[in-house]
Image 1: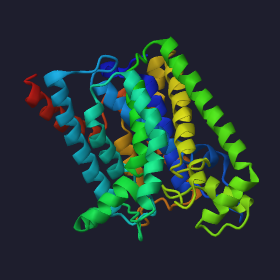
Image 2: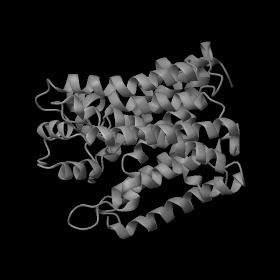
Image 3: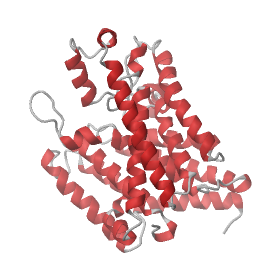
Length: 384
């Protein structure tokens, strides 16, 4: 089930699915005048980006020792390499943020999560799992408390021009943006915890899938039950800033996706599940979905591993292909951003990924970042 250089192919399969899901949410449009989402949008919206962030935590865990986390000097080298990795990812994100697209680009937020993870890299899976669970509850609560006093919350797609207003940029990245670290760090902690398990064992992967499915199902049922109460619905409607006057309208708004945060006028806003809503139940549900996908992908890739590695080779070079996808969404570069361009883009992404997998070569951005971060880590640890 391992590919070149000991990669866990199932992790790459899950990462490829996350990339394709994010592309779908960027390109596909709702059906009809009432904004009804397509099936793929309903499945992918919010869940794909959550899976993407969780897998970042898995990757950090794997490069820092996997089930046996590095300690001492080697861990210091790992941390330095991850700082370099985060800086380069942020640089790429700032470049992409300056393009004329309507996409809430995740990369700078992603880099911030990498830096926040540094103190936790020496921990095992149990404390990391407990921290992740606590963060899914405490993060949204802290977010509501901190945002309640803000008059004009910043919500930015970071680009180089925003470096001139560092306070607004920091507020967006940490608290009020599309992927605010105060909530999204739960994904990274959960991914770190899973990456500290021995995912190469079928029994472990199966347990990850089963626990994930259970968490996703239970949180969905409980959230649906709580928001079915008439009093809760009235409280949510009173606090809503989107203009909804009925629960049907508000539910449709939630399904179509939020912008990273909830209103702060009612604690009941910790309960609904909706893409990018930043609620506790949303984080729990999407973490559960992510674990289920990851566990199933790892199990599936145990059979005909090389075939999975080629077909889903895009998952081993998602930074390069995500960046290419954003570039293709700029108006000046064909094809036009229309729903019919989704399948051609998917085909391009899969073909490029397969070609690199067959050549047993890393993507260009992955090679650059790996070389730079690896050189810094080796310099600090004295390893060749």
